[in-house]
Image 1: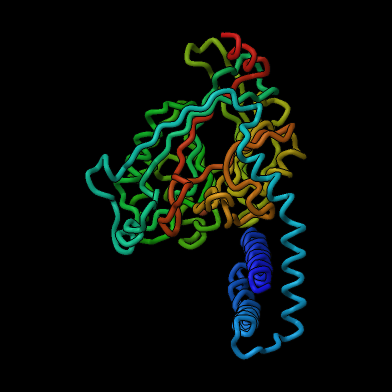
Image 2: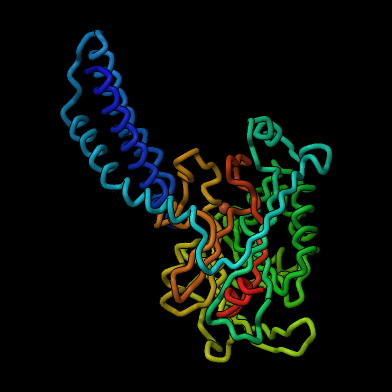
Length: 395
Ligand SMILES: [Fe+2]
């Protein structure tokens, strides 16, 4: 009887955690500071008496002084159990989908670089050295992901256009500059047509000089474009934007730009429309100018929550970051924390919900340099038109 009771308590506690993770993820998807910071207070306010009631109930059932838990906590516990039961099927479907590569993914190559080993010492300072000591911390393991994807709307003349997606660098100084220099070198080595940086670039004043020395080295045939993320507000939107502009990057925040693309042999020309969406933190929706003149339309967004809007407008591709792939992925459970209106659904990866394909990056770093089963990611996407999959399969 005691075993069954403890099992029920465990189930209810799992429901309690799932409920508050759900609330946390949704609250952090908004730009309102009050919403973002109030969840800790709400969590403490609700959790403390709940856990107190659980503790007294358990100690009573195990032979201690039986104390009746307050009626509200019993109702709350029942609610947690019901919520978990209701949530489990959807969560299970989501986990299965995450394990299955979408049909749009034609090929995928991975290369792992242990930056700390390559440098002979982990580039870290301050508390970064302590984070480094945590067993299994992958924050200094850079994965280069090269994905060839099918974009049915892509004109055949644009087959093979490449873009490198960089996101969530979170320059704090805890991870040393040498790590990011390696990221820049690897980015340039990919020799993509376009480099797209999807926000959360800097968190600390001491790294401001890095903006020009690091980002000024990025090279791409048709330009390096960026938007800002919510963390970039800490140092001031205009300050970060101006520093990056002075480094030679092109801001897409709330703007749309047409890029004249040509193939390496210069036999093929086309127009790529790049739209930058920094909502809900900065600016407004990008104007959809020159829409009909474009052969390929890409939305560069910080949060994957812009996916629905991009689908409604008919974008071909979205690149986004923000969710860090959860940053810590638990065995069996996967990502838990993911600041999105969709929770962990779009935590990281490739999502093919026609008419729009979306790539969400796990990011390059994080405010806290802690990653488990979720290494940093630098991605090159090679876009292919419809039929390329059959050609790849038959060759
Ligand atoms: Fe971020």
